[in-house]
Image (tube, rainbow, N blue to C red; front, top):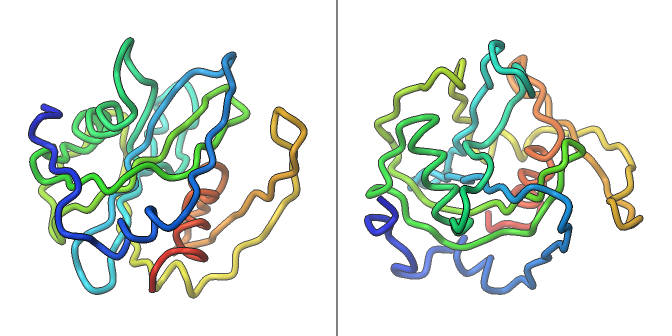
Length: 190
C-alpha cells in the first residue's frame, strides 16, 4: 500500500514551507508513537480533511481529529498516517502525495504524535469506517477567519505550550488537532 504513495513531486508551496522550517521533534519514550495525516486538497483554497470520531468509541468520542492513530511495530510515521487514513476514511494511498512531517505533538492521553502533511485530490473518494461519524472539509480560508481561544499548559518536560480552540460551524476543534491546525493557519503559505 505505501509503495503507491507519491512523495516529493514538483515543489508544492506547502512542501516549501516545511523545507524552510526547522522541525521540532519530541523525545518521549514513555508515550505511544502515533501519526496523523494532515490532508490538504489540491485546489486554490485547500480544504483540510477532518473527522468527527464516533460516539461508540471508548476514547475521544465525538471529537474532531485528523485521520490517524497508533503506529504498528516497525511502521514509519508516513506509513502509519497513510494506513490510518485508508482504514478510517477510505483515502486511497495512490492519491496521497506526502509532503513531509510537521512538528511533533503530544497528547495528555500519552501519545507522541507526528503529523504528516500531504496533498489529496480536490474531490477525494472517501468512505467512513465505524470509527468516524462524519467528515468535515473546511477550507483553510474559513479556518483562518476564525479567532481561536487560547489556554496555557505545560508539556511533559515542563515547557509552556498554548492550546487552541477553533469554533467552526457548530463544531469545537480543540486539543492536538487545533494545535496542528494553528501551525498551518498562522505559519503556512496563503
